[in-house]
Length: 372
Image 1 (tube, one colour):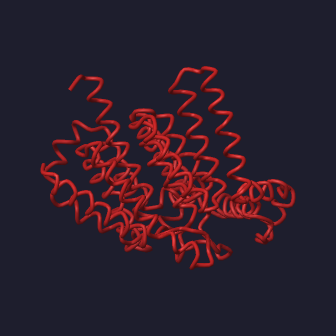
Image 2 (cartoon, rainbow, N blue to C red):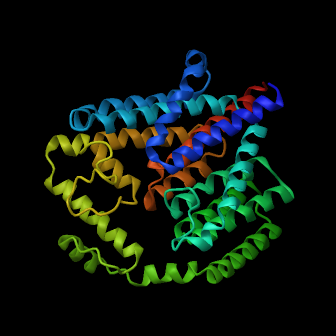
């Protein structure tokens, strides 16, 4: 493939990425890219485990949510099923992409964020660029972080860590910052031999993190969230549907408990097993009258929307997806930790990149294992 065609392909995919970031409904546009790949599906499904698992995610979503969603809101059912089908396309793309393609994609991402920096001074909200929320941008940065930790060395790796850390800091996402540093720590502890030099580097990084967190205000924000946690008060507020303004952590815990109690105490057997239906915890479709925001917890979302059976099947497939990738522990960390505090599995840009990176690293692992 010529350099020009390669560049055009990456730019086209990035255009899909931005479109899906600006509007969740635009995720269905990825299906338009399915046409030239249909003939490849039969070929790659036998060579790529990621294609098989993304197909399983598609079938699990279509099957377990058919009766709870299709007859109540067919549009939401079709849009979610099509989005799941688009992950199969991304799995095929990831299998065909090279290291240069991925690196170029993330370079475009970095440039696009730099171009959005004036918004930091114009809009009276946390910096989010073209992402739906600042936390979405912060958690997204975990994916290029994993990529460059695994594919680069020396100065290049350090520069990308600094660039991505800077983006996370200006989003003021304490959860994103904590997970970012956990990812770096896990990579160096597991992937490298422990040495005095490494220990000193980690201590220096921890000290630097504290300074950055203090200067950015993230440390103060985190402490404010923790010190006001009172589990008895949270339980009482959840009973009254009074979520208050005692910090985002207390707010989330109260909100989670209220939704969990409503689902477990006031749902029939079928709802408990198969859920209330797809997107019933998404804005515009809230199933409970007291809801004012998305839950910011993907485990709770899966339970309520897909039920016990659907949630367990979907989680099993996500775990299986991570386990087949190179450096599986990193992918499990950057997926399952943010799922507890965010909405990453419904974040189009996050899952978009997560799928094709998993597929890319699965391919490179197979090439290494079999000497191809």
